[in-house]
Image 1 (cartoon, rainbow, N blue to C red):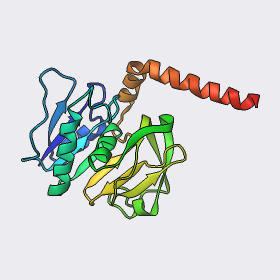
Image 2: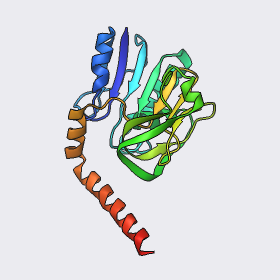
Image 3: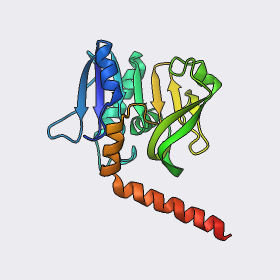
Image 4: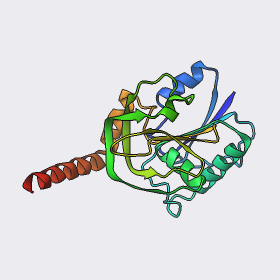
Length: 213
């Protein structure tokens, strides 16, 4: 079994997914798009599954990062060929755009651990089967996706309404990160330190503004 994985930046790799995939016999073709000379495959011929990881760019920044157009084409091919596909954070947003939905800033950034509610539709899905009502997941995003026509919302939260959806029973988009391990969280805290501190400052300012009213 062979899987294509799109990794947008070096610091946001497969994490926990790599060991699980290897243990289950998957051969993984990882395309890290910030490495020199790396290109997308022309199609999904020869692949049995497709994963799109997260990244710091916006799904709508195709003029700055043109290759997501090619990723969107691969998503449409996966949908047409019924190839199992998962998008994580930016990957989920790219999936949403490829299926005709919008991506825009979320009312608030989510950074760190938070609870998501698994909806009844989620509990009936293969992904969240036998999950509890609430799951603690790791978040690091400022944007969020809308639901494509025909997609089913599986999970939600107070801070971000659309946390996960499934389309055509084979395309899965997640807003949160299920792949992170402790080393990745430490690395992101260093690489994205300025973003983290700016977010913390904004939270403190909002709280102070509320107390002054």
